Length: 300
Image (cartoon, rainbow, N blue to C red; front, side):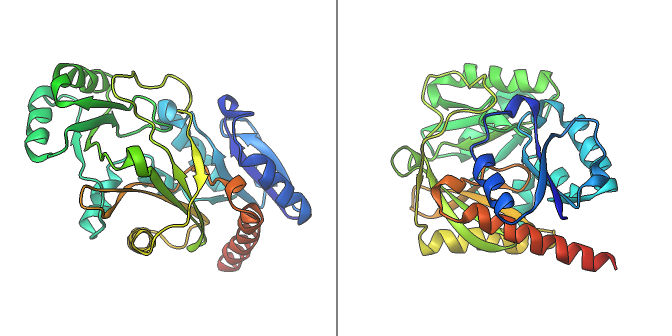
């Protein structure tokens, strides 16, 4: 019998809304599975395919998480693969996408040890937006992400300095005001094929501190993407330096001119919002079976 591992984190137990529909889809296909914490001491070789799902505490434990995924990949087939995880868990990948011709949200990085005020001042000379965002390059769930106005430079600089003092790179991006009324569009793909999309409401409120929870609560609704959004997301997937992936999510925001821009490409542990697209959990289960067959065939 085919057996899958669905990988989560102890801190995420009971929080993953994707898990119940995925479990039902696997059960209906007679696929045995276990829900396993990524840092658990288990025999990963007992699984035919291990799928990362809600490993949402990785940002604060990245070296340990990457080491664990390396160990897992040596014992079983891992989706998505280790090289994808290493690349995707650090938002410096946005530089790679921009260099490959993708329309990303303009992004500047401030590395630990760089003067925060000077870096922020230089960024704002280039940034025309009235507001901007500071967040860590390694982070998830909008933790440590905050929105600032141009009158809040001292607070923003302190935010950058706090990240730098902890050895963390900071990301600076303009706050694209379209998100306040249009939201983000998140497009989900299984094995490179478009599945469905959702609208994610705005998360960062002016004057509010960053969330201290595992992730910030989101307002999600179904959405039919526009042709230009599909084209933008497709371009991102086409230029990825990896072979076909089991799952991918591309998050887009429209800029001041109305053009879609890539905010993030989520390839490690993205929510896939099964509850907003009938049969999508089953589609992932079928894609996982096909993915397993292809990986097993390549090993022969």
